[in-house]
Length: 216
Image (cartoon, rainbow, N blue to C red; front, side, top):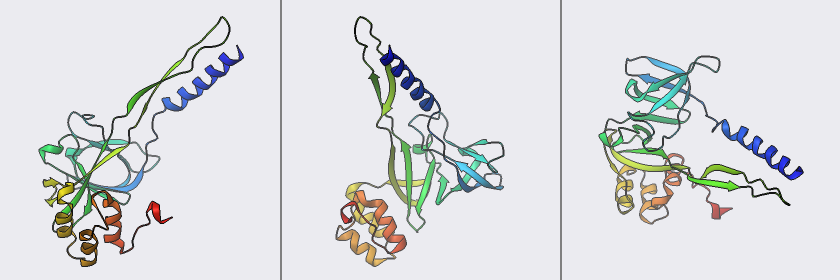
């Protein structure tokens, strides 16, 4: 009986914690409305799952932590700044359900980052039964995996872009970053490869080689 009580206690705590869902994060930012109005305040946005919105994405906006929260759909947004990231709204039909793109580099040929939430895998945890003639089995449903998928696109504007593929990485990134020959040299000598995009962007913007796991 003591074992059963302990299992039920743990289960109750688990359900309470997980029933609240993931904690939404808020960042200081600015929304540029299609009406021409500009709103400063707090903004929350999370990469959507594929097919999460039938007609595009949305952000949550509030003037401050004590004010009402308003959802703002993509078609009422020209662009927005959330924390350190600047977002634009692409009208390319390919991104109709996920139109918010981060402007990673605002050069003549621009680099955009598209983030999408991955779907996790369902997992059932079985607590098993008790001892003696009396057993209790409890199944707990959760998901594992998840995370965020990051894809890069390039082009002259947000509506006309092409996906950055591995085979094009050296040519495309050398062109985008042509204003910094030292960076281009490290692209061509493969110091930075297709999977090192965030490190490459850090080096381009700061001139400092980022620390990597094998440097520690």
